[in-house]
Image (tube, rainbow, N blue to C red; front, side):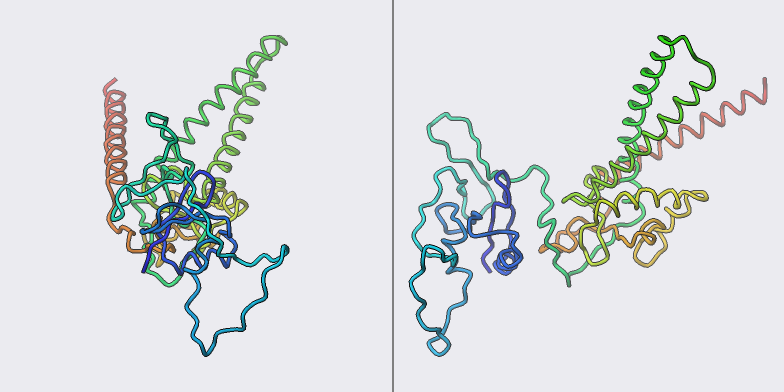
Length: 324
């Protein structure tokens, strides 16, 4: 079956996808008559209206409908009028490969194409393809993702705490006030802002088209509903606050992901979500990976070394205190 590429925004292209997926996207309104398409064998990108005949099954004489009346000015049917390929559209360097180059107006001009491939694609993020195999994200992959995200959010929290402390400290110096009350106020405000930062970070990223935080993207997993749909922002924020339940007591809610049937942590069960491979529920489920992957292994090894050093440092401190 012929694979197609399409430009889903003015700056990115998606694909390859089979013809059936293109038809489904057209019926769902995700792409329209003006969406640019390309397949192997075409000289350039063409709007979908110029390729309508390729997505219409051939009719037999028995079921051929009567000839339609000539279209009027108000008719919105697809037309098959010849359309010249866009001069600024990308062309394949090798019809058998996936190499793309922009076409420039003059030799030496800066290479720039609005249809260059996305830097970090998650193919068909909003198109759920059911029926395929779904690889669930295991506890170790999820742990590696949390460590990455925790580091990012922790740095952000430290910056916010420093800014809040500086602002309130400056106000204290100007007003000549101070004391324990102001220190408590600094702590409360900093903690509330850090909590809001975490909710925005996890809620927004999980509800985005990637359906994953930077940590999950690095590991190659995403958060979805049980049917593969993207979660809403409200559910993403609620899922973040539900992780508080997973920490009580002794992080048992997080460890549940290693033992439940669908590898769900407590906050997944509360919010009805799944964590799966990034290629699950897409047209290419064969790209899913069961192995941990390089990023997961590296993160877990670094964390294990740091945890071991911390244990040794605590043991050494306890030993010195015992002999003091």
